[in-house]
Length: 77
Image (tube, helix red, strand yellow):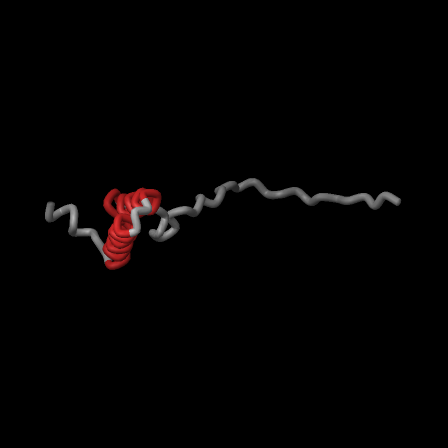
């Protein structure tokens, strides 16, 4: 359990707190869809998912040593 909480940062705890807050507000207002959304938002930090990390959603740039050839255009009237 100690190893699980070792790599938690402020943003991850904040996302969990906001998810729990959404769940509580949904229960108080009897809005069960809101409870489901809060559960989803609480599950994301618990599972350490999402793309909030450094280049979490970026795709790697293609690495190609090919040179592009010059393109010639012909004007048509």
